[in-house]
Image (cartoon, rainbow, N blue to C red; front, side):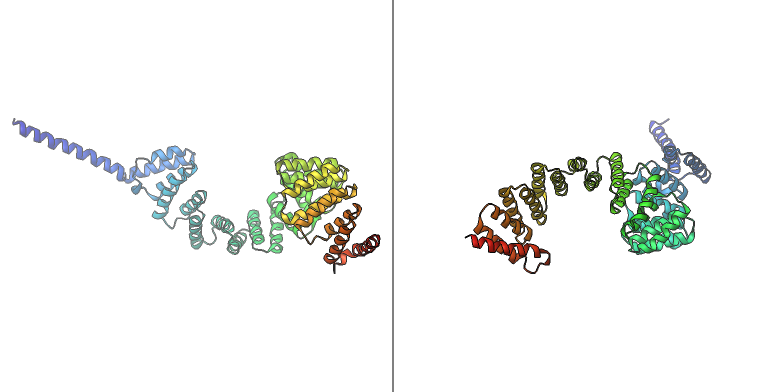
Length: 432
């Protein structure tokens, strides 16, 4: 046999084998026969129903993406979603929707995954397509309503949740979502009725109790708000904020002992919230338990350093305990941390503490600082003149009283001080 002929024959045979191999490979890659495809799909569906999502993905991994059927693309996408691989989930679910755009289930799953992927606008587009196709499809109405609420499109959210309630009047969540949307749309009075309906269907639903309580608190109806917050906290005894809100109701009703009990429980459940300790300190202050008040305020201040309000309240509590030095120290720290428009008031308090202890030089310094920040501060000007008089700076005191009279001109709240200032001017003029 001619060696060249033999080589050509062998090459022809090899190409034939290669062509057959590539043909088989292409058949597998581009799409199996219907029987094989159905078999693979059934296996995938079974694995999906058993929660074996990784195996679902492996089952279809040899099938080319472009040859996937809509059901196959859906189950692969849903499996990726279950494995929190949202990028691949979106890719396959979009494929399923492209192949069967009228399939509500496929589009709904895609919208959910888009939301989880941080693409709410894209998700809303698909929910709107579902609602346009079937205006009674409650899951899409609910999720679209929630997305509209997050996007502050409150009127459209109200419309979505109104349809939900209309479709199923016994859906307690529908009533709750509808009420929330109404509150956001500025219709709290209408919301109360739907919250009541929600609680009729599910009396222990804490979010509805909480929202309804907040509406009564703002009304204000503190007694009804207290009743509802108490019910909500009983349903969720580990929720510190509910005890805090219960305490606020007691505080508004001037039941400071009960308020302190509620605030204390809130601090026990969450020891990182400065606001809970601050309100506890305020309740103790109202009960004249000043040492306990200072302790609570200091704990609040340790969580919210240099909060001027807390430092100011600590100063007031020390003043009630006649600890002038500590009171002045706290008030000075408050003044250094406070907004400028509030500093004058704080220095007034510092001046009053010194004045009451007959520390007139220190009082004069504090009142001068108050006037530096607020030259129209009538209280500071009056007591500055008094302090100068006590220090026998009579000429300065007279000028101070005259400045006070100019500042207090026409101020009916300063009548007594105006009369006293005039008398002091006359008496000091006689001494000269």
